[in-house]
Amino acid sequence: MGAPAAQLAAPCPDAQPSNDRPAASTLCAVRRALVLIVILVAVVVLVARGKDDPPAADRTTTQAPTEVATAPATTTAAPRSTRDGCRAVAAPAPRTANPERRRSRQRLSRKRRHTAVIRTNCGTIEIRLDVRRAPETTSSFAGLARNKFFDGLTFHRIARPGGNDYVIQGGDPLGNGNGGPGYTVVEPPPRNLKYRRYVVAMAKTETEQPGTSGSQFFIVTAAQTPLPPKYALLGKVVGGTSIVRRIAAVAIDPTEETPIDPVVISSVRIRSSKRRR
Image (cartoon, rainbow, N blue to C red; front, side, top):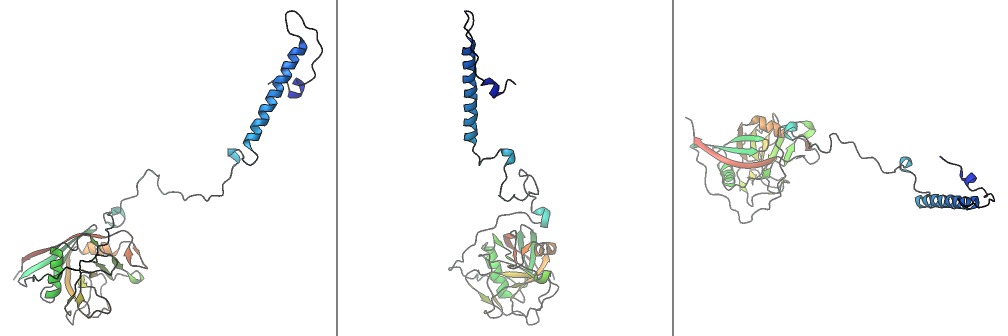
């Protein structure tokens, strides 16, 4: 690609000028000037790059590589329904108790059959209210349902101690097990009550007397439990037992017994019908 720089920079020979071309010494001087310019440009480029900035192909990084995604970034995650049969919904915000709320005085008729229809993002559950053995508790629950108290609440607790079914619990406006409607009802449960699978009862704190209830209820998912008859009876699941099992099987944080993805109650409505003879 041309003569080496040393050759181009060789001393110029003495030559006599002619009338039709420049003198050889002049051409040589121009050539040397060009060589010097090339050398200066090369030096400037090297200085500009700097010795601490290696070529891109030689660079290394101390930053830890990010984990490889299981799917392309443009692909959305699989819907929740493909994992546990529940529709993906947003977690509702906690709702503070209304201190002015009063217990409904409307009593459920023993001559009719009353069913609480609980719609959730995992399906619908039907609970037959045991008005005969728990008239106070069932009437209070029905009053809250009529006022749409349960709409937008969650099943905040799914207990599976040791991986075994136990209970699913909902109806707390705070969503953490510490909330209620602003009042309580006390109705001791039947002494012979056994908390077996699909029995529905009301939750209470350890310090509250037996039969105390607010709005939190639980559905037994174990074949049987060692619970003593301290929890007010609400009724029994008569429809949607597969939904109960579905909710009981969702992924949870075992230390808190809370579902990873929210299980939301969209509505609770009371359906009444004539009792069959």
